[in-house]
Amino acid sequence: METIDLAAEQRSTLDSPRLRYGLLARFLFTGMDLVYGKRRTLSKFIVLELIARVPYQAWEQVSYVAMTHMYGQPDFARRIFEFVKESRSQQDNEQWHLLILEEIAHKKNLAENFFLYRLLPQVIAFMYYHISWMLYVADPRYSYGLNADFEDHAEHEYMEFVRENPELEREPFESSFAADYGRFASLADLFRRIGLDERLHKQESLHRIAHPRFS
Image (cartoon, rainbow, N blue to C red):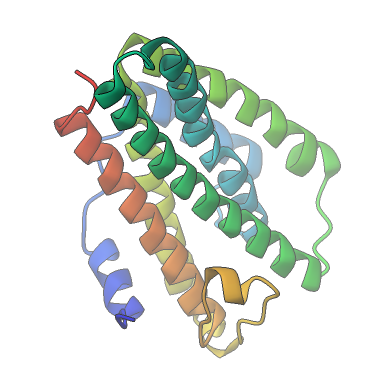
């Protein structure tokens, strides 16, 4: 298996400018800062990860609907099916992030406000799902663009979080999900890996904008 220099990947992110976010993305990020504060925290990342899954769920759902109408065109239906598998893989990756962060929060005995950190994120995710769905139906590039903005934001936030908290280098990563997601020497490397995942998701969305698959 290829060894990745996660510290180098962190430096690459921190040396790179953020994307020029669209209006919807800026509205979302500003709203989250107003509700949860600008400070990067584990609890805020859990909210981000809960929301991060939903575009892939929306794309998967729209694609399944399309397949029910396009099964008579096998080549086209196969391209849709391959896209569904890719979206499912990315969705699963975001799910591992959420499960691992929840596990860490549980071990640290973090007790957060139920409304702000349990109920409200579900409402935000519900709204974000339908926005992603409607944008995809109108023009997939709009939905990909919004997702690229979200993933770029997440990538930078994770890498900044590691820079702001050097003590993470000394905290070991121990998880019941390590065999599924990966083993890392420290929590710092875990967060770097998650940030790198977000970059890869961003790059995939940008690639889909430039190279539409179903035209």
